[in-house]
Image 1 (spheres, rainbow, N blue to C red):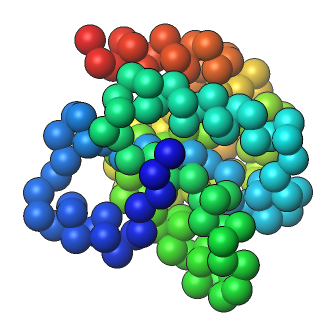
Image 2 (tube, one colour):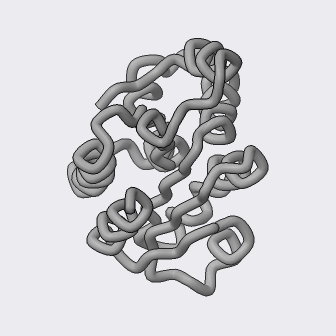
Length: 155
């Protein structure tokens, strides 16, 4: 999985919008990683999401804010704003929300992506959640449905 610096990403955007093969994906999880730490149970779905994206599109750029956060826990407000800006600049924002707490944790990233014009894909069983209803472009029930959605997008 490659993590691209936001400044480098913006330079690429100014040079011309990427084609479908160079789409950028943002995996929601900044607040979850900060508040809860990244437990093994939460890390596995993140790996599956990134793996599904890269298996379908090896040239895609996958931004994982948890990776970035673990490398730089200094300057918390600046890093938070940088990463939510990255969510807003990405083509697709993917949020795996297994419970209602995770939906509340994800609101800043999902809202930034929605405002930035990204396709917001939410993977959850909590379809009545306000955050999901307000900001999701696509709601999917599980990780397998996400893989199917990726295949349909490429067709």
